[in-house]
Amino acid sequence: MKHWKDLLVWQKSHELVLSVYSITSDFSKSERYGIVDQTRRSAASIPANIVEGHSRNSQKDFLRFLYIARGSLEELRYFLLLSRDLDFINKDNHLELEENCQQVSKLLNGLIKSLS
Image 1 (cartoon, rainbow, N blue to C red):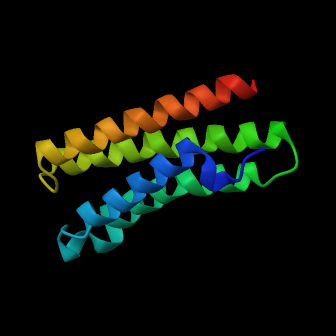
Image 2: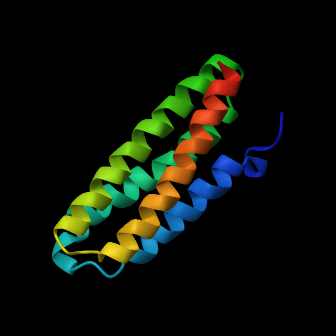
Image 3: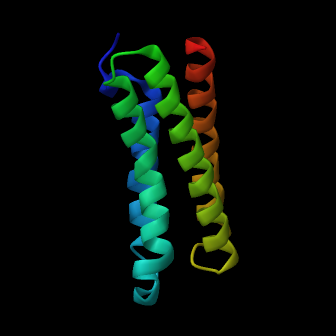
């Protein structure tokens, strides 16, 4: 099996994390320990779970961690929507991040399907 860094789903989810960190750096300091931390944590959980699952000894474990990554992705999508609705990010930035989330979602679902 490929190294986890070679997986397109990992690459795209890592790029998503970098974008989320960049966008949330502009949030108000009062949100530092609230929505910023939650958003960043859910974003970073996606590629982290891909790495952990890939590093396990079984396809079953890999699938379990891919499902966890998918859950983290959906959690991130909620926090991005909340951030938009609270006017922490503008609609254009939200749309771009949502498109990135959709791409990662398709890749995750495709990998899950291929391993199932």
